[in-house]
Amino acid sequence: MKKWLKGREEQRKFYGVKLGTKTNILSTLTAVLVTLILFLPLVMVFYQFIFIYGYERLVIYFYIIFVWIGVMCFNAVLNYLSVRFAKALEKQNEALQAIEEKYVVVYQLLNPGFAFAALAFIVFIAFQLGGL
Image (cartoon, rainbow, N blue to C red; front, side):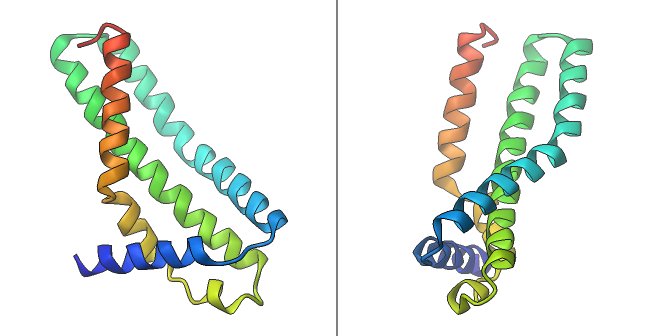
């Protein structure tokens, strides 16, 4: 629990740091690109799993849980890399350099607001696709 609270504090510090527009855009886009590259093999394996096992009623709940955990991990890695790349681009920013990005990962993995929103969206999409 202490790591989660520390992560929330570190995330708030990151949001409070004044970054240049170029740094903000570049670190965010780079983080998104690298995270997509990291998660693409997992998405492809998951797609093959769906293709093989289809849309059986019992397996759909596994799909939802797997996608939910994947989205949570994707968000955590994305935020970690955003902080990491911003720190690499602005080495002179002392407030930014003081942020410990490892706690940001813990906070984002266990962020209840994002977790609820992501799960609600995934279940909504599953209903729209006729899976539930």
